[in-house]
Length: 271
Image 1: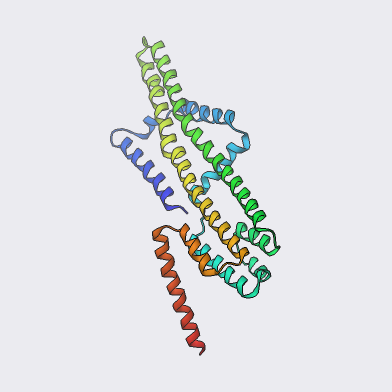
Image 2: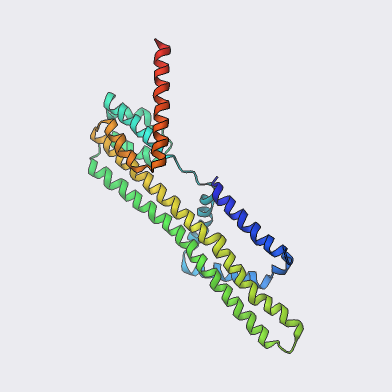
């Protein structure tokens, strides 16, 4: 679970609710016509802009903002280095036994091409094409959310205009002015909250996660091509560490030292 996304939504809702309760009640901000105008109109415009399955898939995309699991680049580098060491010792065909233990389908499929002795240029072209298609799928989900984020405030303004028209038509009836003014103002409120608390932030979070995943897969491509070329595992390791941030490099070095001490301890125990 992405704690930041969860906390952000909870804190945002709590802040809005508390600000309302400090000088009023939640029922004052519940207006059925406004809900129909903003939600109904926003979804209607989104359906016009995209295919039905693309709009439905946006809910699956939003789920990834909360529960999407990303593999640690540190673990990925260690996996690729271990595969490179095994390939140097026992040959590329020995990687077939390791392939079944790998959970990441991108690494597993790319490793299969290495085992099948596919040319490096073809491996690179195939993996980069898959990466490009993945990026396009990610951008489609982000695009739907960004569109909804733009449409909800627009429909809030439409609701405001409807409310003002109703207000002007009922100026001679003081009892009708309040409900008309409520529609005029609350629709704008609904549109702003939906856009700035949900659609916009979710689109930004998915964009960040997409860039991280693309960067991770670019690192995998570099590692797989190094294994296929028979490069020294240490040289490959230094190359892949360039993909890490300074903080991640420090963490990697610490994990590497712990691993070395564990290996020395096992050797001493055996002796």
